[in-house]
Length: 456
Image 1 (cartoon, rainbow, N blue to C red):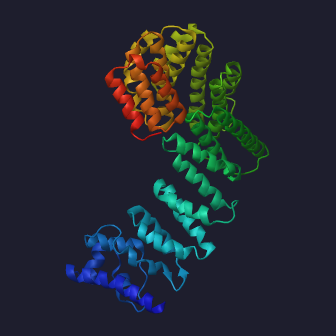
Image 2: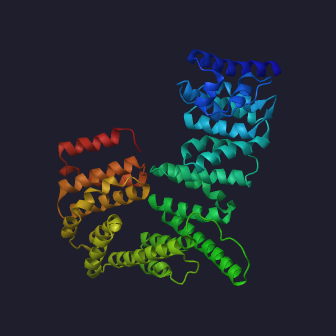
């Protein structure tokens, strides 16, 4: 091992030395260009034994020599692992940089050596966390997977957090099939998280279930979120009233968000199951949260959002119960709150289909908004857009506007195909097939293209 170590050190440093000579730099000049202290640079290149270099120093040398990021990374591992001894201060930044610049070959070489000792799983977890916190979630995934595959204790913090982080990364996408699989994989571990992460996890689980139309599961997570948020809120109240000095639980969002969202999500889950009167009771739970203590400036803003959403959702429930008299007021509300137009029109078209009232003028009023629905590329936006196109198609078919209805069906079919939403895809297919006799050759061709492109 000592001979190999010497060879590796010699190879790394000989390459650096060769480039220094080719560029005609003295050590002083090279130190000036790289920002590395002249004495340190001399010890790194000429010391006996040579001083270990950091990955940042190697990157600085690569930049001066005009080489691509990741230069000589394959020779750097001996700076981190020598004679079985691991230097975490050098190894973690090295693996982070390998992930950032795409040197998967170097990661694949190092990781098996680390996993020879189970204690080194914590190093891989540290790499994953650093990448995740820096916003490089995609690059963090392999390291979380290493932790999950090799950690024997499924209750350990690093195992459970790895499951949670992977869930959060996957559900950033719009693939309904993958998102549902992510929910199933993560669900058994949700209660093992620390309370602050549990709040975020339950909120995310509920939101994912909304996009994939899993109303009962959404209902369940809303109940758990409400229970946990209430417990945490009451614990905080007791601490403050007993004058116990302690910092408030650190969460991604203000505590009032989790409390209010629990009621909001519950009301929507009930609405989607057509339990409208029961849903109204839960709207009352978040309509006025001014009583909620600890409302700083951010909390006040969030509280006002819930007040606005409650107004919108009461309109929604009344319309879905057949009360068309409130539609003008709701239209006025949507005009003042353009972000609510998509979900609002889903409600209005759905009710029009159920109760048979005409809403042609509403489509004309919001025509510009409807044209921009395609811009929504997030999972919730695409899910609501798909629901809108489906309800719109049904509305047009009922009024004998078959060509327009088929176009809306094709839009819905394409969206469900993109999102891998099997149930919606089947419904759209059936809807198109039912009205096939009215389809033009162009519409039939587009239908066939969507069916045969290998999706869903």
